Image 1 (cartoon, rainbow, N blue to C red):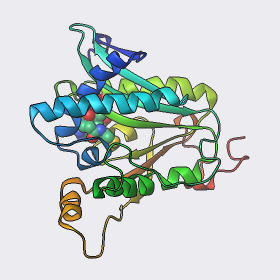
Image 2 (tube, protein in one colour):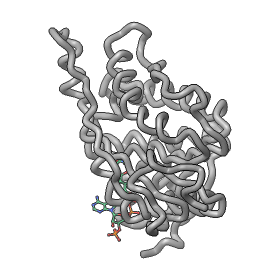
Image 3 (spheres, rainbow, N blue to C red):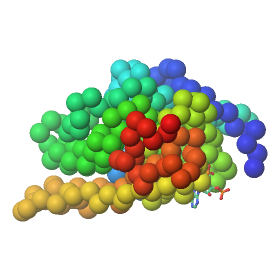
Image 4 (cartoon, rainbow, N blue to C red):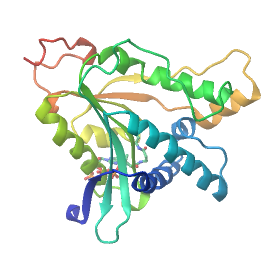
Length: 251
Ligand SMILES: CC(C)(COP(=O)(O)OP(=O)(O)OC[C@H]1O[C@@H](n2cnc3c(N)ncnc32)[C@H](O)[C@@H]1OP(=O)(O)O)[C@@H](O)C(=O)NCCC(=O)NCCS
């Protein structure tokens, strides 16, 4: 594998981030990822819609990144031609990020009060509920992992994972991912194991046409909760899941 062809870099400007957003949108429409459409502002599918929607996505997520000291946006550059091959967000929480316990997660990228916003909020609040309950401590996570179809199965995803593990392993942090069946094999290769599979409940009694369409277009597959203990060491000390970790566990 020609890994030296690639370089992992941390993103420091909104313009750099816009280049990654472009690749993440391509990665998540090939194949079509129903979750992506819920959690990003997808207002249509014409080339003009894409330009506008990606610009809004860049604005929203860059603003969130700037507000969150745990967020590291990284991408992999193909040194031969300067293209962005893929990227992700690493979250490295140096203290308990959920001191107030689990909270509903609002959707700010679809109009307030719309069924789209309600749908997305229901999805996100369920998907992130286990993390918010179990990880009342310093830990890490990965969001928005995507590799351009031109670069798949060439070790780019592995490089993105390695970037984070190089930083959290010396700190002894656990890592946790709300993954999809597509990402699963990459994460398992990198020391994660599925501890729970979530079936998100998006049913509604007497749904509107809009809600039924959303369920059709955006029904998430099983959300796989993947866990990696400190340094990826699956020793006899490791309990059955992150919910069973106590202050004494890793001593
Ligand atoms: C998931 C994804 C990020 C993987 O990126 P990638 O750069 O192709 O992954 P890598 O080449 O680093 O793969 C490392 C290892 O993971 C496993 N793996 C990765 N993709 C796999 C696949 N589609 N099928 C089976 N195993 C896979 C393999 O063991 C692979 O090693 P190998 O190629 O030597 O056998 C990429 O397929 C993608 O962007 N998919 C669309 C977006 C998405 O679903 N993201 C995940 C959200 S949770």
